[in-house]
Length: 162
Image (cartoon, rainbow, N blue to C red; front, top):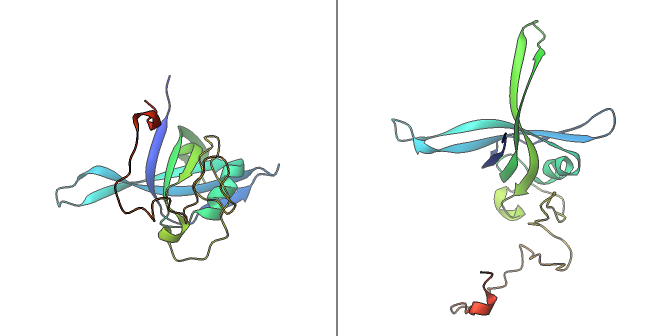
């Protein structure tokens, strides 16, 4: 059986960070994901998908993503149900994120003040933000390695990974 979800969209509001009684971080947010087709009026509609992320990734998501931030989410769909305050059964479907990727540099998503961003990559090890000198193969978003070169980029066959 396969239950995998990959989404790219924008947050509809700031993530909500809470902690379980055992001190485990959990963040919830809604991702607006554009549909690939237009409706009869020629407008693109969006789906609003509830997501939840746990532990350190939850804290990073809450610290560095804001309303309007572009994010990629990989995870699985989970359904649950509970009795609502009115006594009726409430059914819930959400994506439990294994990985949340920040897809924009901090300067392009909003003008809000944000804390200095640390390397982030969850379990996949990718980093989009860094406030320390280059380590491993990370590139800082404020350092453009091609800024001083106005000509074509030369790549030899030895440089290609395939």
